[in-house]
Image (cartoon, rainbow, N blue to C red; front, side):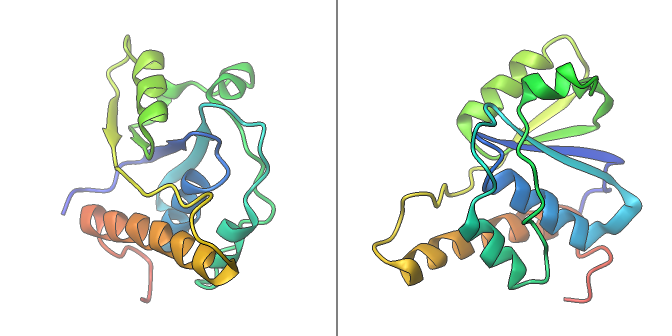
Length: 152
């Protein structure tokens, strides 16, 4: 298991499903011992209700999450190079993170996580897809950095 970095940025396409789930799961596991944020290539979508629902099943509150993009991070004065690690959860976010950090000594790691949006016929099928994505993220976090503060 690797040592937990001091700061991690999770990113995906819209910062409305995978990266907020990763941020929430990591905060539950690792608490305040690490600075955790998330962003997207674009941010015009609100937090996805199915993502909120499947994280609430684990006691993780995402309903107040506000989506933000890489560009908004820069506008608000957040410096990507201040993070120890960027974890990209989609190919588009991996490319964008690599573009933005090409002059910084910053590791960008790609975790291929299922995009659950649009999958499944009914509510139960859709929730199953979101749970699968959530559980993939959870498994990657634990495999990489252990269970941290979690009692799971």
